[in-house]
Amino acid sequence: MERDLSQFVAAVRRIPLFQGLRPDQAVTLLKACDRRAVKAHSVLCKFGDPSHDMFILLSGQLSVRTKDDVQVALIDPIAPVGEMGIFTGEPRSATVLAKEACNLFVLGRAHIEALLRRNPDIELAIARNLIRTLAQRIRDANKEIAYLNGLFSDQEEGETTFKKKLEKEEAEQTPS
Image 1 (tube, rainbow, N blue to C red):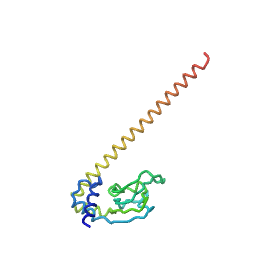
Image 2 (tube, rainbow, N blue to C red):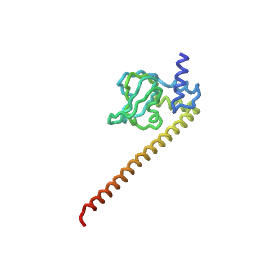
Image 3 (cartoon, rainbow, N blue to C red):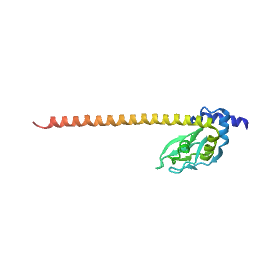
Image 4 (cartoon, rainbow, N blue to C red):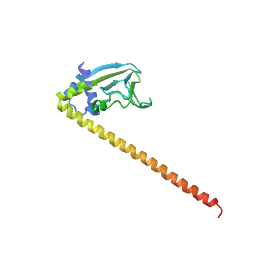
C-alpha cells in the first residue's frame, strides 16, 4: 500500500498542474480524490455540460471528441482531464469517453476548493502552474494562427500570380 501511494504521489507530481508540490502536499491532494473504475465506451463528460469534476487518468485510454463527435485527441496515463473547467467554471469544451476500461482519480470542484482554502501553499503552486499552462496554450495557439496566416498568404499570393499569368496569356492570344 505504501509503495502504491508513493507511485501515485510521484505520478501526480509529474502532471503539469501539480508540479512543484511537495510529497506531503501531493498526498493531501490525493486524499481529496475518489477512485473510479470506468468501463470501455463510458462517457466521462459531455460537451457543454457543467464542469463539476476533474479526472486523473491512471490506466486505460480516453478519447476527446468535439460536439460533432470528431476525435481530436487520445489521452494516456498519467494525465489530467477537465482541469481547466474546474477552475474557470466554464462548461465542458469536449466530450470525453473511455476507449477502454480505465481507472481514474476524480477530484470534485467542492473538494478542490475546500482543499485550496485550507492549504494556501498548495493553492499558490497550482495557480502558478495554471498560469504557466494557459500561457503555453496561448503561445501554441499563436503559433497555429501564424502558421494558418502563412498558408492563407501563400494561397492569396499563388492566386494573384496565377491570375496575372492567365491575364498575360489572354493578352498574348488576343489579336492587336
